[in-house]
Image (cartoon, rainbow, N blue to C red; front, side, top):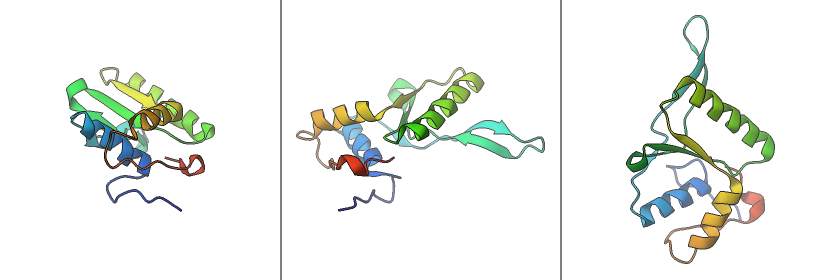
Length: 123
């Protein structure tokens, strides 16, 4: 069975994380900000980063990654670039192991969580 994310989220893992935030009444915004990381000489966009969630209560951007390691490396690089260019921004990456622990510990108490087979985790 292939799990489909809602229209709002790029992947079911993001929907699950939003459900956990909702359970704890943590206000969140989905991909509210696109940070320019690099621009071409003519001013056009060369590279950008839009973290998955912003948590206003904590002034924290959260990027969820449940991808293969080669993709995680790219996200780590973008996060480093973001923090170098915008040192005032508070941003963290939530890795696959962190996500799996959250789902495991919350699947019985948070309504709406979709537990995915490991091979389908790919956000």
